[in-house]
Image 1 (cartoon, rainbow, N blue to C red):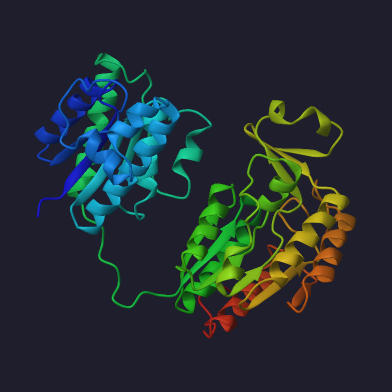
Image 2 (cartoon, rainbow, N blue to C red; image 1 turned 90 degrees about the vertical axis):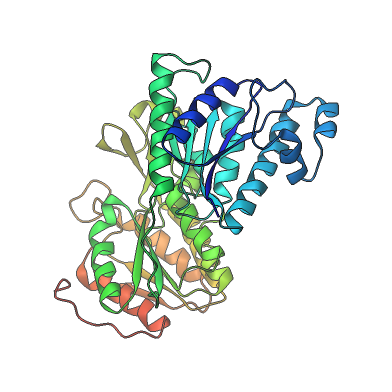
Length: 413
C-alpha cells in the first residue's frame, strides 16, 4: 500500500499553483493525490480526485451545489467532503499527510480536513491568513501548521515559488518521516495548565506527578491551551487534570484576549475524570499592547508584562462572579474533584509587595467558590500558589484520586 499526501486546492482559482506544488512533491518521490475542492468555476488542471467525488463524500452532489449557486454553501460542502476523504484515507492506512493552499475559502476547506485527523498526522496550510490574528481560529486544538503565503496564492513568481517549494519540501520530509513508537504500557496521561506567573507551581507539581509514574502534558493557558485540555478530556484521553491556572475564565468574563470559551472547566467533570482545580492567574485579564485595552477600562489597574502583553487586575466584584462560576462548575463534576486556594496570592504578581496584591479581591473569590462548590472539598492553604508546599499538596491530591502513590524525587526537594 502506497501512502500519499492529499493536496487540497480549488482548481478553478489555484490550479497552476497546486500543480507546481504537486510537481515538487513528486520530484521528492512522495506520492500525492490532488483533490479539486472548487465548485463554481472550471478547473484549470486535471485533478486526481474530482470535485464530483469530493461532494459525494460530503453527502451531496456537484450538480446540487452548482444549482444552488451559493459560494458559502459550496465552501461548507467542500470542507465536509475534504474532511471525509481525509478520514477515510487515514482509516485505510493510506494517508501520509494533508497539504492545502488558498485564501479564506481554501483555508476553511483545508483546515477543516486537517482538524478531522489525529495529532501527529502531518498537516500544512499555506494561507494568505497565515500571518493574521485569525490563524488560531483555523488551527483550533489541532497541530495544524500555518505557513504565511506572503503574497497572494495567485501565479508563480519569485516569492510564491520559494514559499510553495518550501511548503512541499516540508511536507515531503514529514511524509517520509516516522513518529516514535508509543510505549507498550502507556503511562497515565495528566493535563496541567500553566502561565508564566504560575510556572514554579506547575513545574514542581509536574515533577512530582512524573516521579509517581504519570506522563504530564503542560498547556499554556492562552485560550487555545484551555480549549485543548477540554477537548482531550472530552475525548476521554486523560487520566487526570491538574488545573492550576484557570485564568482563561477571567478573560471570558471580562472581555480579555485569551478566553477559552464558556465551556472551560466542564469537560473533565462531565467525563468523571479526576481533577484538582486552583485559581492561578485569576488576578489578571490579558490584553496585547496598551492600544488593545478598551476605553472603558482606562481607570483600572494595569501591569505591563512585556511590549506585547498588558495585564489588568480583576476587581473584587469580578472575582465574586468567577468564584460563583468555578464553584458551580466543580460542584457539577461527576468524578473526584478538589479545590485548592492559596491565601497569599494566585500569581507571581499577586503577593505582598507585588503590583496585583489584593487580599480583598482574593477573599471575594474564595468566599464565592466555597459558597457554590457543594460537597467538593476546599483546601485553603496559608501559602502562595507558587510555594512548594502548595504544588506538592495539589499533586498529591490528584495522585490519590488516581490511586497512585507519590514518590519523592531528587528534583522536588
